[in-house]
Image 1: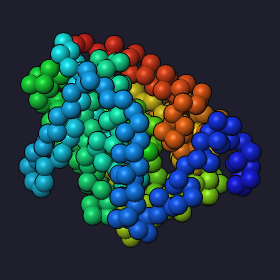
Image 2: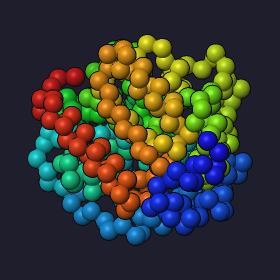
Image 3: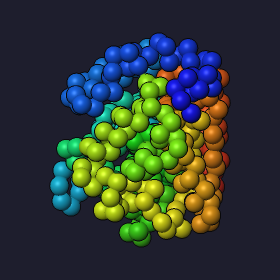
Length: 331
């Protein structure tokens, strides 16, 4: 599929939103200037947040999660005000290709989700590459997950209903964290909800070659991001599944999985492959492929029909899975 074909197949609402996106014209995702790009992403996130009314029924608390060695892991705990517990929990990993972003960037839409579902959300401010190469981010995710599970009662949370979720690069970290949790024998998460996750450093799939210049996390940007994450290890046999979840060959014992991705997303094929391999190894999978949709379409065109459908679908998945577990358990 060439660029002309991709634009012809693009959903009309998403195509209109694409034309208005500043990053497609000014290069906000220029990873050759990482400092400037991070500043640009923060400014863009703050600008978007200013247009969204705050959700007054949800409180936000910044917490430093200690670890045995190394720096604390900052988290942002969102919790419905005065909600009766114990509450189910989403451990959330923000997007940004594992090189950009920060925990609070998604708060404007996570707060309404919190209120609507009656759940708590823990947004993990994991360390970014290249300053912290993989698997540092997954180790931060594991630390936050274990701390929340171990201290759930202190915050009115339910340790039996803790799920992992993430967007894009954060989806990749959620998947790697799930593997780390399984392999250490910790209490398993209730689910992993992966929104167009970044899973494979090899960039060999058809879609990774097809999506080259739509303007939203195209091949060149993804190659640079993985180089930042892995350095000289990228594409070699020295990459573990805690760095790139697609490298895992044994997927048994992972939690039920939701994957949603657009047809015009360069992550499409690695997501479809991961879903197929999970299912083949006995993991319950719910997979949604959105025709005519590019990467992170729900963020850049949130009022489109496709984005609305996507959010209804993932919200329904969360409701159904939170209802499956008992309200109390011992971890």
